[in-house]
Image (cartoon, rainbow, N blue to C red; front, side, top):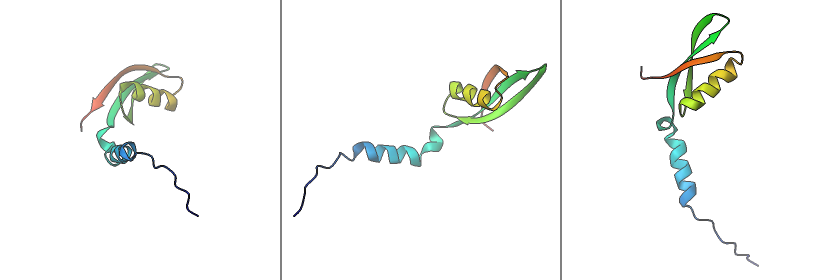
Length: 74
């Protein structure tokens, strides 16, 4: 006895695989300038956008204040 189940469309799955394969196109490297206890330093992060760069830098340094975010093209 064979039970037939409907197949899901493959379009979204193929698009997700393409995005995963080309994930380097969706990310960038940013330098986040942080301030803690009178010291200014930079944290380099890989992110999708500037807001995510801030979130990652603050997750690594929870007591810091973000002074700025700059994309790095080196």
